[in-house]
Image 1 (cartoon, rainbow, N blue to C red):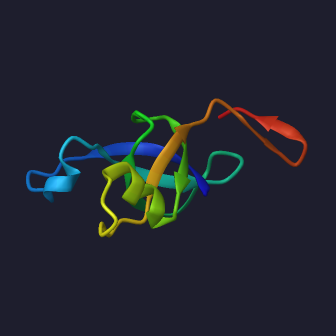
Image 2: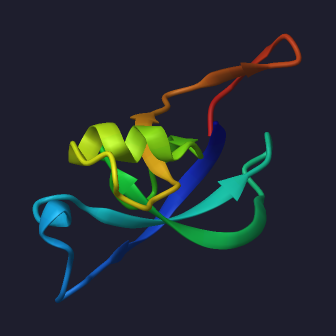
Length: 95
């Protein structure tokens, strides 16, 4: 799992039927200071996150399979939670 920030929505006019009703969000991973790390990625949202939220991103396809109730879905990233704060190196971080 990694910590990221939601930076946008993804709009898809054509989706696999198992994807209907689920949001896709654009996420950038961040460091403990809130600085972006690496490229932006697309993730399924199962935590009702929105733009600007700090989120916990699961990089295991199993979470997407559970969300979509489809064992054959090919998806890697799923937003599993919205973070209020986290602890790092003995300090509480609020971004």
